[in-house]
Length: 292
Image (cartoon, rainbow, N blue to C red; front, side, top):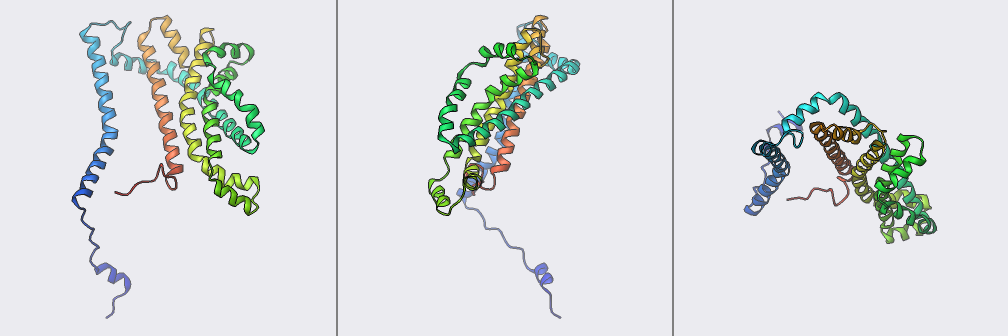
């Protein structure tokens, strides 16, 4: 009786893994410790910080209207969730709306800059002026000149988030390999083909780096704009809730709103990191896994 290939594979001995030497085992243990510590250490430090915050309030008998204990802040977060959740949604609308406009505008203008040096020379200084001018100084003017509060908040947040995407994407488009650009020109590739198959892929890591920065800045721009609008009696975002709570000396609600802003910023950063990892993990050096 003859055995077919499947039977031969079933009775064949399993391939034995090559044992690691002492140096490889040491590097593997160090990598495992680093992977565990990357998640465990921040959690431990956070728990210890909350514990010492609570103990500081107890040991010094600090009243809740000066510094509330973490438990009271958490209770307030749950009790006022109806108010705070609506404010959070309003802030998120401004944040992601501004980030979307900044992404489309920054990417489109960066492409225009690389297609014409004269356009870059003409408009790039204005982008720099917008970036270096403090948003807290020009937000009142924008809110005066723009009738819609929502549009004014979007413009303020967009100004803060726009420049990192423009600057990084322009740098990435210009950093495409010059030898490859000459090769494309030699084979008669059009501007569109060079842009699509060479410059845009080369600029992807730079664009994603700018997007990471812009994600956090769009939240900061939205909060600052809401502070300015809220001081005039308008606005309903988290910044407005902080202002209203400060007028009433409702410190637990202020801390609850601050925690929501911080958690939102962390989630935006993690989302941008995940997006960058998913887009770069298969081909770019910054995201490729190294062999042990």
